[in-house]
Amino acid sequence: MSIGALIKDLRSARGWSQGRLASEINDAFGTNLAREYVSNWERSKIEPGSYYLRCLSAVLDVPLAVLEDDVKRRTFLTDAAGAAIAPVVASDLLTAGFAARLKGGPSVEAWEGKLTTYGTQYMSLGAADIQRRVSGELVVVQQQLDKPQLWSVAARLMTLYAKTFPGSDGSKAVHWYRMAADAADESGDAQARIWVRGRAAIALGYEGASLGVADVLADQALAVSDKPSLGLLNAVMGKAHAAALRGDRATALALVDQGRRIFDASGSYEQTSDYAVPWWRMNVFLSLLLARLGDEKGAVEAQEQARRELPASLPRFATHLELHRGLMLARSGDRAGGAAYAQAAMDALPPEKHSLTLRMLMDEIRA
Image (cartoon, rainbow, N blue to C red):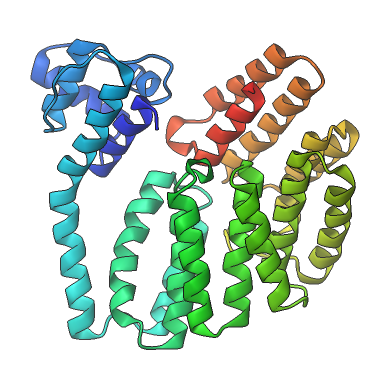
């Protein structure tokens, strides 16, 4: 994780905006730091020098020995994040967990309502916000796992939690996806077993990360049932992305055809939930996959189809489509132009709307 991302995590854990962090530094040190400067730190456009590292140490209430090399500073900030965040968060989580055990916690119906809310919030909130909220819910629900239905709830929460970690780190995201699959198995709910595996597969395949794990989880979903469902659709499209990234064009296109048939039977009308795959979102999947295959005509058609129905309340997904165009430019030979086009799209999206997936797409375009 970059220094900028760690600064953002420390700030977000306190519930501060970028402007609030700048103001805290200005008030404490008499500086004239602008919010835009904090944004540049967090986007790794520039790194804070030793003076501002000391300022950050003071206002975020973490110890800081000013170190020059990046590796040591990353280690410090990682340790600082734990030291600064753990005491307050741990207290709140422990309280919530014991209260759930003593009082019985929310009902199954209440949990399903929470999941519906998180499914909607995921589409617009940043990863840090979702991670903080869902971690608290996981502490509560683990005290209630005496009913099969609550294992299903836990499995879906774990899947959402996993999405807040980059799949490329090879550990945290995959760990939570696998745990979610095990929890779904405990529930005995076939649809939950398929959905959590399919959602993991499309997340990893779309991000271009841990492709072997994406294939394994997708195959497990397909083995549970071949009946059309949104979970099965995610699994098939995740495998298609993995095949495209490996250069297996024939397999990728065959899986796309299979995915289209599943979508025709199970596509959803709900437009703004992570648990839904409406027509516009199916076209977002297709747009990136066809861009990766070098099918510019098909990719542009999918992008246009997605834009026609994409809700205006979801600007992050419009940025996804712009990054797909940047990838097309880069793959056609104009690497500098593709990277510049994609970066302009990222810059136009407010930093708090950025997601881990967008950052990973930017890395793919630059590479």
